[in-house]
Length: 271
Ligand SMILES: [Zn+2]
Image (cartoon, rainbow, N blue to C red; front, side, top):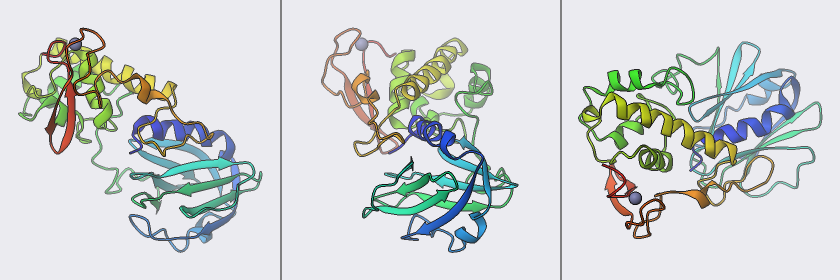
């Protein structure tokens, strides 16, 4: 599933090609995404200029005059900017063409992604309104995390993956961040000291930043917007490594399930 680093990588990949460009055409080949693609998308977009491409959590926000095109990649979506688009393939659902000749193509084999038109900036849209701070912004710090976890008896891993606490820390990055911070994923969030949360915030930031720098990837059919496969999966400390030796202390990595998701940790390095 594309996580925050993949979405940010996509944003950085497509933005230079379409920002300040006027839309000249919209082709919807299949409306059936998680929610139907608006039938009037062409009417809304053609002739308008994409001012900026932003990101909030795992949503890409295309700012178009006062309004916003919201794109989510779902489980298997990708968005790529082509100077010369190859022939359309089976899972290519939407093309947006620009005056410079670039075609922005949305592909999504499993069709859990979405393309929505939102009037205004979207801050009060149901999908966006309850989101916590971005992990790479100053609003996410140890003081915030300490304050907002004191009433959370849930485990720190489940808490980290709760978008109301902080957005965009998916399963892979929660596992990796907790390893880097030396914190056992099953530890209750409200039992973790401020000092340890300082390390956790740094670990979350470092883990996500490293993934973005490497063009992060968490799904084998995810393709970065320039066509290169991400390579971050080669460097996991614990994710997917049950029974393999810890890269720090050589103790076998253990696995369990929390909130329906796979957790991996080193029983020696993480307490
Ligand atoms: Zn270890």
